[in-house]
Image (cartoon, rainbow, N blue to C red):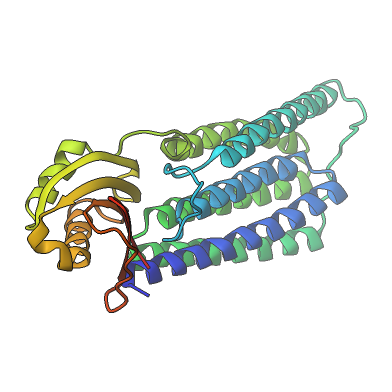
Length: 319
């Protein structure tokens, strides 16, 4: 396993752990909000759900080195796009309902009517939320530290979202303390504020992840061709494609024509090309199709590269 693969595996493990812990904390918050009828805590749960959604997309961004053959070369496939649309629909439905209920609650308070959703704050609830805050804070600090160690932008972005969730939970705790001492209107006001913040944060998450949801050229073919020409043994390169985001992950495909005198060292040449691209553009996965005159499949095991030659079209990929 290469160093890059090891870093990606560690990043996936951290994001996977973060995802499940976030979902667990989400279930705790929703259960507590339902039991205490706190609209502000329910609204904050929307942001926790958004954090889990962002973690899921970040987890899918850190793609394993071996992708399924039918998978699109961009960061996400249609499946993730459908998940995003479903999440938008759910967020809109839940947010709208919370806004309506909060408005009804504030109207009832101004007219001195009996509250339908009166928050019931207690000491056990405060203690539970304190544990939630500490757990989420520890998760955010872990993500920030590992993002620095691994130089992983997906981890860094995800950790910032988790940290924001911490501050919002603390805000809700403060509001519930206000409700406890008699400021009942704080619950409805905070619920409206948190719903609006969740919508803004969702747009931020979508803007950061959007380049992975569509196909786009990550690196100009001319720039890649210039790098290839600097490596000896290649006479021509064409059909150059690149998808992803520079600095996060880029999937590159190209066809190469190797000079006959360098046929035996083709694996070394393509390895040098990939290393040269990585030095300039960061994490990449490169697939090379070699035009050659060989007619039978050859597998070179001493190297980290496997070369499959079939007729004139061969596939070179890293194991």
